[in-house]
Length: 186
Image 1 (cartoon, one colour):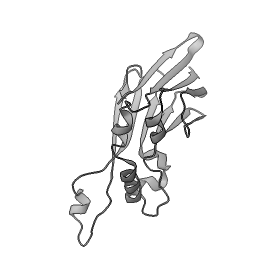
Image 2 (cartoon, one colour):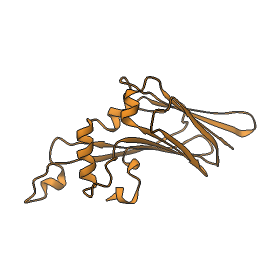
Image 3 (spheres, helix red, strand yellow):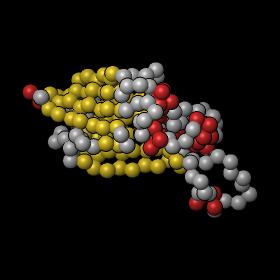
Image 4 (cartoon, rainbow, N blue to C red):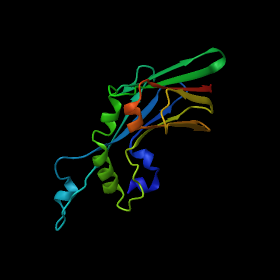
């Protein structure tokens, strides 16, 4: 199972790889609870299925990150003097935010069942509890910080990669958007 080799935050994620010219790739992954039997279930015998989940993933390319959005999460990038570059990621929060249902379109009980379907050992109970946004820059990250953080939100950077982890249930209850700022130099 692919989750065994990754952090459980990886099941629900946005991963961006930026190139020096501002273009790049964006990959998303989210969870879906199928209403009908999956192909594997249909090909199985002697089995009573009571938990199911599918991981859905997609990858696309962009020529400029400004203007790209995933559900209602938006991205804006720019360049200042001396090759100083910046990126602003806006993650709406509260009941009107669309991204939580785009990535994990079910309630907490169904999320726990989905986690059990992905990891029968029970060690990965937090599968689908957070959204992980990971951005790989073309050079070393100078700084990253966020405003509008809710309890459990984490931002970090290491080398050329910056990561933001947002707890979905807390984001649904928040009242202001989370804005993540990143900087690097060309």
